[in-house]
Amino acid sequence: MQHARVITQFVVEEFLPDMSPGDVDVDLDLIDNGIIDSLGLLKVIAWLEDRFGIAADDLELSPEQFRSIRSIDTFVALTATHSVEAS
Image 1 (cartoon, rainbow, N blue to C red):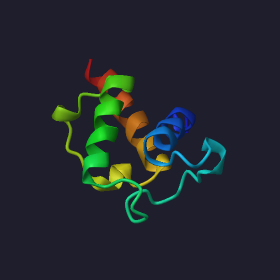
Image 2 (cartoon, rainbow, N blue to C red):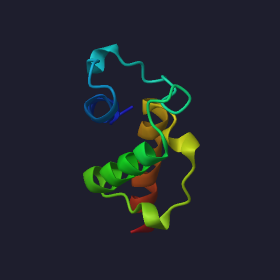
Image 3 (cartoon, one colour):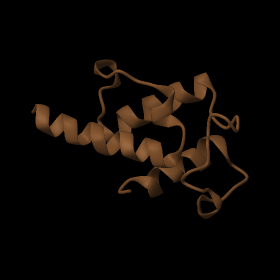
Image 4 (tube, rainbow, N blue to C red):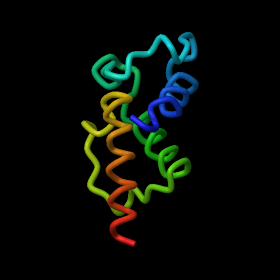
Protein backbone atom coordinates (compact mmCIF):
# COMPACT_ATOMS: atom_id res chain seq x y z
CA MET A 1 0.00 0.00 0.00
CA GLN A 2 2.14 2.75 -1.32
CA HIS A 3 -0.26 5.70 -0.92
CA ALA A 4 -2.14 4.70 2.24
CA ARG A 5 -0.47 7.29 4.46
CA VAL A 6 -1.37 10.29 2.30
CA ILE A 7 -4.88 8.94 1.63
CA THR A 8 -5.43 8.41 5.37
CA GLN A 9 -4.24 11.96 6.06
CA PHE A 10 -6.73 13.33 3.52
CA VAL A 11 -9.63 11.24 4.88
CA VAL A 12 -8.90 12.36 8.44
CA GLU A 13 -8.58 16.04 7.50
CA GLU A 14 -11.75 16.07 5.41
CA PHE A 15 -14.06 13.58 7.09
CA LEU A 16 -12.72 12.58 10.54
CA PRO A 17 -11.33 15.77 12.10
CA ASP A 18 -11.63 14.38 15.65
CA MET A 19 -9.35 11.42 14.90
CA SER A 20 -5.66 11.09 14.23
CA PRO A 21 -4.38 9.22 11.17
CA GLY A 22 -2.85 6.52 13.37
CA ASP A 23 -6.29 5.67 14.78
CA VAL A 24 -7.87 4.94 11.40
CA ASP A 25 -7.93 1.32 10.21
CA VAL A 26 -7.18 1.06 6.48
CA ASP A 27 -10.05 -1.45 6.20
CA LEU A 28 -12.65 0.77 7.90
CA ASP A 29 -15.74 0.85 5.66
CA LEU A 30 -16.00 4.57 4.93
CA ILE A 31 -19.33 4.28 3.12
CA ASP A 32 -21.27 1.88 5.36
CA ASN A 33 -20.13 3.78 8.45
CA GLY A 34 -21.45 7.06 7.01
CA ILE A 35 -18.04 8.71 6.89
CA ILE A 36 -18.20 9.34 3.15
CA ASP A 37 -21.51 9.98 1.37
CA SER A 38 -22.16 10.68 -2.32
CA LEU A 39 -20.87 14.25 -2.08
CA GLY A 40 -17.89 12.98 -0.13
CA LEU A 41 -17.15 10.53 -2.94
CA LEU A 42 -17.04 13.44 -5.37
CA LYS A 43 -14.64 15.24 -3.06
CA VAL A 44 -12.39 12.16 -2.85
CA ILE A 45 -12.43 11.71 -6.63
CA ALA A 46 -11.57 15.38 -7.21
CA TRP A 47 -8.70 15.11 -4.71
CA LEU A 48 -7.38 11.94 -6.38
CA GLU A 49 -7.48 13.68 -9.76
CA ASP A 50 -5.54 16.62 -8.37
CA ARG A 51 -3.10 14.70 -6.15
CA PHE A 52 -2.32 11.72 -8.39
CA GLY A 53 -3.20 13.06 -11.85
CA ILE A 54 -5.94 10.49 -12.34
CA ALA A 55 -8.37 11.34 -15.14
CA ALA A 56 -11.55 10.02 -13.53
CA ASP A 57 -13.66 11.12 -16.51
CA ASP A 58 -11.97 8.40 -18.55
CA LEU A 59 -12.62 5.64 -16.00
CA GLU A 60 -15.55 3.47 -15.01
CA LEU A 61 -15.96 4.20 -11.31
CA SER A 62 -17.72 2.23 -8.60
CA PRO A 63 -18.33 3.03 -4.91
CA GLU A 64 -16.47 -0.21 -4.12
CA GLN A 65 -13.25 1.46 -5.25
CA PHE A 66 -13.66 4.05 -2.48
CA ARG A 67 -15.08 1.89 0.32
CA SER A 68 -11.90 1.93 2.45
CA ILE A 69 -8.45 3.48 2.51
CA ARG A 70 -7.09 0.13 1.30
CA SER A 71 -9.50 0.07 -1.68
CA ILE A 72 -8.68 3.69 -2.57
CA ASP A 73 -4.97 2.86 -2.41
CA THR A 74 -5.52 -0.15 -4.70
CA PHE A 75 -7.53 2.02 -7.10
CA VAL A 76 -4.72 4.60 -7.24
CA ALA A 77 -2.06 1.92 -7.77
CA LEU A 78 -4.02 0.18 -10.54
CA THR A 79 -4.99 3.42 -12.23
CA ALA A 80 -1.41 4.70 -12.15
CA THR A 81 -0.21 1.39 -13.62
CA HIS A 82 -2.90 1.52 -16.31
CA SER A 83 -2.02 5.15 -17.15
CA VAL A 84 1.65 4.25 -17.55
CA GLU A 85 0.80 1.29 -19.80
CA ALA A 86 -1.50 3.45 -21.93
CA SER A 87 1.22 6.06 -22.52
